[in-house]
Image (cartoon, rainbow, N blue to C red; front, side, top):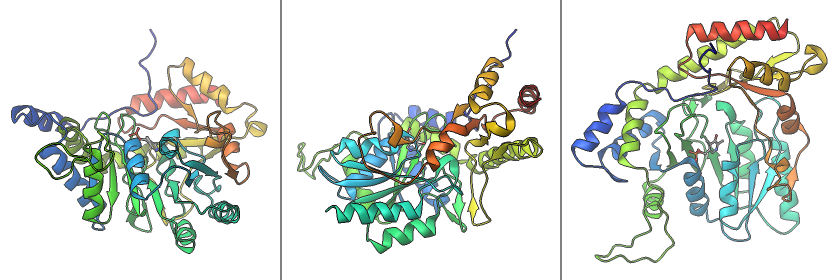
Length: 378
Ligand SMILES: *Cc1c(COP(=O)(O)O)cnc(C)c1O
């Protein structure tokens, strides 16, 4: 008999989600508005603190799209984007007819490199165009070098769009990820730290920004009895059913972050004596990662095997792992766009693997993981 599958990161319900969904049915708020949408936004605002304003949307991708629109990005503009990320960080740049300019990572946080970022800005300006926005990503829950990146953004007066899709519950110098950008993005997709089955949010620092995001996400309807439009609108608002799931998930967010971090501790102990395997961890005490996905780098010259061999080996044991993100500048669809930096992201992609990290993994599943990996690293 094949054992049940161990997933990389699967939805983990807290228990009260169905209660909120049931209430939505009982009161007939089965629509992209209602008490759960407002309640979920309040929950997120309280959690993030820092007086933020949250607009709940249909996805993180929608939040990035609206975020770029609010920052004034349009046809022919250039937007700087961390190359080492999921394609959803970059796709909305292209929705708007703008050009992505990709920037390499630095080795401490695996996120956007402040030096390569500045080089990119200077070169784009020398070529005649000042970038309209900078998209930095807290990959796998690890905060990027916030102070350094913000310093560069401020020096050139370019707004920072913070892609915090993977980093709800992470913080930097005690301040929550999702509050650092002029605008910030959260995701509640099925595999994220909490889920609404599918959803996202745009975080801002003024009610005017939030109102504008809500306005655009509900088809940009002017204030009139008939349907009147002076702007192009989108159907990007979160449904009250999804928001009900989100409210239940917010009750267990902190607990789930602790469980993800406990998975990271398990791997830290496991790999402590494995030569040639480096576990991705916080560079110093300023950084606190939710450890959404625990990742390792395998040096094949020491281990004698590659990360791909480990991935295939674990697959045979019905254990799901995944190579680190393939950098955007190496993706066929994005290869034609400018790129600044070296081969940090590329080398992470070649040697790195994400390991099962869900908050719902059991002691028995950890045991299975350890036994399978023992066999591989023998
Ligand atoms: C998941 C994710 C997104 C997109 O969020 P969706 O809710 O899936 O649209 C954007 N950026 C990063 C880094 C992500 O991991």
